[in-house]
Each structure stands twice: as structure tokens, then as C-alpha cells.
Image (cartoon, rainbow, N blue to C red):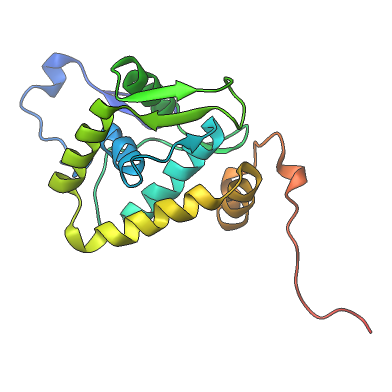
Amino acid sequence: MRELPDKTRYYTLDEAEGKEFEKVDLFISDVVLILFGLSPDKPIYSRIKYQKGLFLFYKELDKKGYTYEDPHFIPYSYGPYSFLLTQELDNLVWSNFIKVEGQYGKETEAFSLTEKGKREAQAIIEEKIRRKDLEDFKLFRRSIDQYTVKGILRYVYANYPQYKERSKIKDKFKEIKWGRGKG
């Protein structure tokens, strides 16, 4: 067994044979498709909102007790970032589950489900999301959609400051200390 810097463990086939591995409710592709499928006709604008929205969605999954394949978020240029989520987005685009429109790397870049992606997302939601959690998750998705890129960054940096340490723009999001002033 070997371990990468992000704590990902990998085994040779011989090492893995006969070994018990942790079972999870949701794989990375499931989580991505679920987030999109909660509002299947609404795109997610920008790669930053894609990453931060999923970061926050994983926090929601934690609260509800779901187990999932770890996306290995690290502090990066714009806060929490997962290389695995970037790769998964590329895989889902390549597989024709998600389409991309707009200018690469800009806030106008839009990611949305294709018809094939909508069917798959709906099937995953029906199979893997508990009915009692569905409305809460849909409300969560609507709240994420209402954030601008700056808004979601402000929220993430305020609530998860450990992820802004390597951010290129952290100085634009200074903490405000509320309290009694003089006078």
C-alpha cells in the first residue's frame, strides 16, 4: 500500500486481493450528479461555484449521515479544491452527462445536465437519497444557486477559514469583527 500526499491510498492488485475496503453510500460521480439533479434545468455557473458548491454539499451529506468516497479537498488558489472533482467534471462532460457552455474559466461558463445526465441523476437520487432528505437538499441547491462567486467565497472563507490559507484572493475577504465600538 502506498499513500499520496492528499492521503489517497492505493494498492497493487496482489495487495488488494482479499482485503476488505470501506463501503460508501455515494461515489464522487454520484455526488456531482445528485447536486446537478436537485435542480436539473438550472446550470451551475463557473468552476469556482462548482467546487465550492460541492464542498458545501459534502458538508450537508455529513450532517445527514451519508458515507461517500472522499474527494480530498485541500486549501488551494481559491479556497477548498478537489482535483478529483475537476477530473470527475471532465469525465462527465466526456461521457455526455454534463454539457459546458460559455467562456472557459469565467463566471459565464455554465455547466448543466444533458438529457442523458438528467435521467442518470434522477435514477441516482431515487436510489441513494433518503426521501426525508430530498427537500432539504433541494433547498440547499437553491441557496447555492443564489450566491454569486464572491458570495460563495465569502461564505466559505468565513465558515471554513482553514481552506483560505493558500488562496490568491484571501485579502479581498478580510474578517469583520463585530462588537461595541467606542463612543
